[in-house]
Length: 292
Length: 118
Image 1 (cartoon, each protein chain N blue to C red):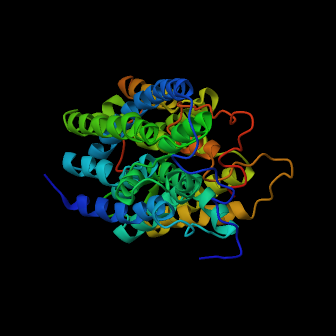
Image 2: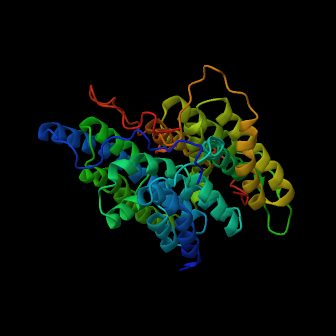
């Protein structure tokens, strides 16, 4: 563990259960959480269905597609896994790229840790499994509005809005996917690459991300033609960010810190834009100085 | 029904869970050098773009070397990216890509896909 870098959760707000809460404010914020969560749920239903369909087209059995949603529960990584498997990527490569792609959750978890530290460990362990970009963005917005932690609000954000619809839709997509006789006739074979490029577009906020995306794509295709798609995807995924590093950023370019609510919105299913309000007057932002 | 990929899902879950849980269960463990954070920030766009590009540009016929491919899928993916950027909505992009390819194939303008690399 590095000691020369400030912890992500320094200057953290008070933990759960400290300070009184206005019941009217709590009810109003939960109501808004439900409305925002409904939008997320609709999107999770759509994308979960598309994931199930893509997985079946790539040769997953319904059980395998459903197991991945239950166990991994990370949209971008699951879509990517469909591509890895279809491309014949060896499992160590799949696992390495999954770890890199999902490492951003470390920062969400770090930002939430001081807020959830009074919750019993077994429940925190379960909360961790359902922590996604959407759950983070929704719950941080809710906590910010009420100025403290609300465990029930977290479960609404993580389970009701995301986990449940994602998994239900996966079941439907994985079941129906195998019953479409010739998916390519309906253009369904382009769902996967189109979803990948759409997700990538949502993450591009500056020159470096653009260079990483273009560099990653170029490297992946070039190496694939020589050594096969499995190796090409790994080289593109690992080498693209290095090319991004070589790209100078504009001094005045806005940056979005990984692990911040804004970053969570970008990784979240596109089309589900969340409004993270500033904290009430007199209260420090929960993430101020607490994120890189 | 095959179940082999369930093992892969478990392994993927095993590398995903620690990043979600460690700071929650062991506060303070999340300190990362800034260069690592910046690198991780760039992994997403690179991996996703690499997958999309290989999926539409590389075909692998059985027993033959991978080959470069140029087809309607290129245009569909470009349109999906443009629509997603313009409307900030991936579903719109997906719909545009699927409709384009389905219509082109129905009219005989585009061929059915060759085995894809991605």
